[in-house]
Image (cartoon, rainbow, N blue to C red):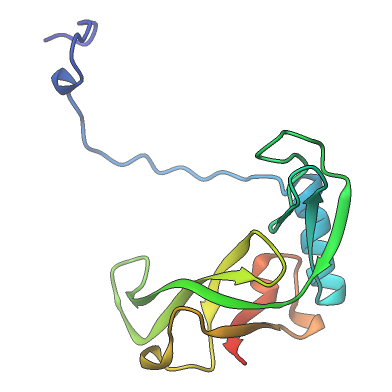
Length: 157
């Protein structure tokens, strides 16, 4: 089968394995810039609210995913939430075993319909559980750079 052969069934497709090393940059956009600036400057989390659907988006969005309304209403949201799901990471991105396992969790923020994927800290892996209440721990102001990493981790409360 040649490269220009027209497939009639998906199982006829041929795949070539390989690596494509690329780097890219994404802009934060208007909503992201405001979200990260609030973390940087004020240790605050903000979301956008859809008055039609009564949904609070965190991370914030400029348009509602449900009704496509433009979202102009910004609301400060608590820096607390609960562990919706989590995983314990034993290997780094290069396949090396970590000396101490890291805990990654999706934290559903209180009063919102969203949340953040982030590290958990000040807790042992065997003590983590779904539904565990947590709060954001922000880095010192001098260490913050305007990114999600300005939140050092979430800890149990």
